[in-house]
Length: 106
Image (cartoon, helix red, strand yellow):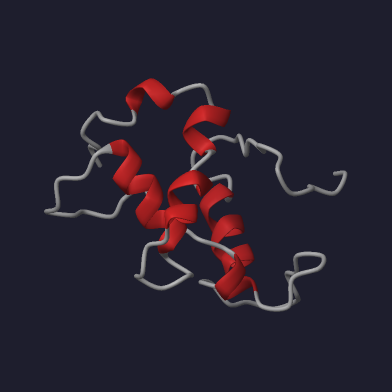
């Protein structure tokens, strides 16, 4: 597989139980195991990667925008700067910005 570069959208596709979540857990440093899993140019994957599991149950009522922002803020503390609002580019990049004000359903 060729290297993945920043500012790109990557799709990880596979059958149920093929190891997609396990791979993401390894990259994010959530799951430990034999061998080594590294990202080029990143010293600490645990602080460089924000991960929001799909099976997380929350009683909070969040909009899609808030859920994306929460995932983005996971590694940078709770203080929100104006610049952080502009960093949530994933919705526009995926052409789903129209969903930003919809309620997030987990």
